[in-house]
Length: 117
Image (cartoon, rainbow, N blue to C red; front, side):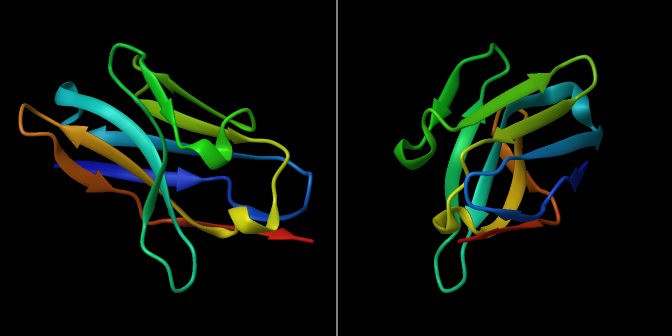
């Protein structure tokens, strides 16, 4: 089992910045990909960014150039720096890790990000 604890959400004006953090504990020896997803009201949960254990990074197009994902393998943490935030970035953001050879998903509790116009 892996437990994920997120922090860093909040309310910010358009153009502002927020930093999300996620700390993993438990069976952390076999964490592969770490990432962030988001779910806006009435929409499906979607990938925002992910980073592999080797450091390969993927961003979805809407956040490229504005968001930066990073991980600290020694501390088992993953962070998402969000700059130039837009109202359409408003959502609940979830930390995700994929564990073991089967890439089993574990999720954080979610943190609300609200961007006002």
